[in-house]
Length: 290
Ligand code: GLU
Image 1 (cartoon, rainbow, N blue to C red):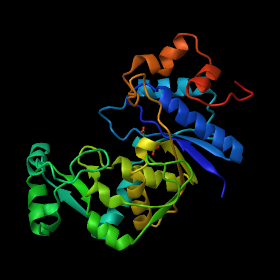
Image 2 (image 1 turned 120 degrees about the horizontal axis):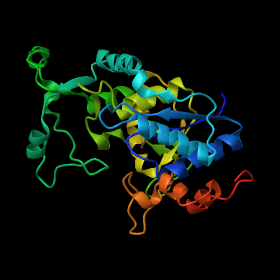
Image 3 (image 1 turned 90 degrees about the vertical axis):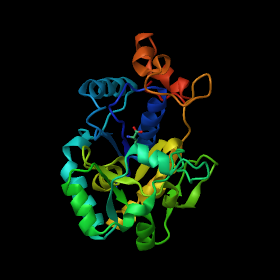
Image 4 (image 1 turned 135 degrees about the vertical axis):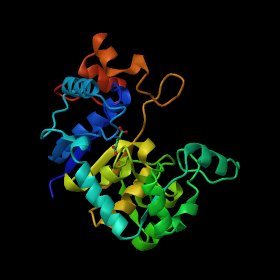
């Protein structure tokens, strides 16, 4: 199988140095492996994603010398494909409509001892797993807002124990053959009424469809790998290798955000930085071409 790497930004803001590190590592590793380098535009959130950010991403990547092997895949053009994957999970009895509002979730999980996911959000209260089909249908027909969630306990039982190969490092330096631990996330959202898929679902479907063999991304997504391995197993998709890389932090030690102007690629370019300067700023060795 041809080694295949992908950089998968969401066009919901301008790229910063953290994205540059990810894009450049993917490009370097694809080149070293003699493999393919893909660009995937993760624009399922139609509210926050904008064409002007996608254009800026293309400009910034061209400037960095990131040259994809084929035209980008735009997730918003493939909702039907994600829907088919969701339907498969639903046919396995692993998906349920969850009706609690944000305020109701807050109230039910207010106890400081309530379990939290790796991002610090309270796990979803799972009571609605057991609503009868009639009740679900009545509430959906009545127009009650809902999200489709994965029944994590049933999904984990169906898939059995899972592992993944990590050639970078997790937050605690984890590497090698690691145990996937999706249960830390509880009943994750797979689709919403206004967004008929989710990050987790579309990323595993696309990685498989595009023949991605190596996922190289920031360590902030390390724990998400457990959910990704679970969905791959349930959907019968091949597992890529994973390489999670360090994050670039600002002077105060915070993870960069898309609104931080001074580490934005556009600002650095406007201030005269070259692609080689960006490589140095993110701690990569120069390449002959920069
Ligand atoms: N679209 C995700 C982001 O912008 C990255 C997805 C991935 O690499 O798995 O953070």
